[in-house]
Length: 143
Image 1 (spheres, helix red, strand yellow):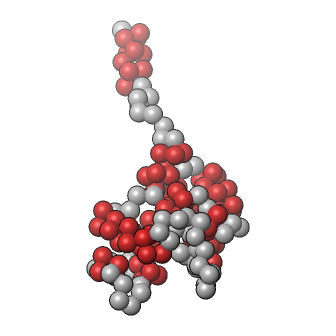
Image 2: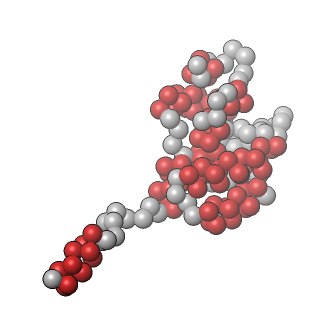
């Protein structure tokens, strides 16, 4: 009876069979924008950089795939960190990445981290206005 009890207890405490998400899985999940924002995202990428994550604006500090102003570098690095943690990246790893990104021009970030930054930005109500441009068809996708 005692051995049966141990066997039942062991079966009840078996570890889950799902695998641990890899870092690339976590980043890919964090980079996903809600479906209602996908048309806006495509329009902004086409308008701002033609999909070039290394694009730099010649007349302002805007840079990267989404043409964030340079002043966004530090705050965006924190938004990326928080979104990655929310999607399962260990805090220490996300914090180390944040420090690196905060000291790196956005146009030099990997495209995936720029996508995570966009997803983090766009999910904050009203933040689409960062890309507002009078007369732009992209504005219609943000409503």
